[in-house]
Length: 220
Image (cartoon, rainbow, N blue to C red):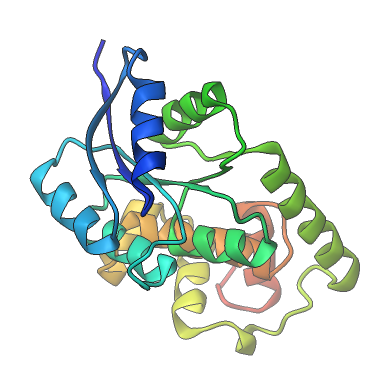
């Protein structure tokens, strides 16, 4: 069985050691390094290209912004998945980290069994959120759904990049094809796709296509 190599990023050594000890008996998960700052994380990733998942707190002691750190990690190492492990359950923290490219979000009172499940899930390319985080995001979605009607945002309120990506999505290009056309990574395309779904208050890609047609972004 191939192992899932992970890097732990947390500014508290006790937390790092605790995670290492708890995961030491999990045969398919291997901790190949740890870091206390964003800069250390970049150095460790460069030294360990096999890392698939970075388990990272969003409050690091070096004063760096966690969103910037996440974006730097994913820009330099687009093959990794960032799994947030933090005590912050505020909607603003969750949203900014997801927009930065994180694919999982757990709270530090989560049990170790769920952490293992989350690592395995994000390593396969799927997303994972603990129940409290999922409930927070659902509440936000329901509030937005009540206040904004579908397609209510005029196309002028989208950024130029968002309009480009929306048009290409509506023209049935894949994430990889869009990335190649715009000279960006497929992960960045996927992040824009998810942000557009939230911003336009639609459920899925089909909703994006309907919006694009309504706004005359494509020729039928």
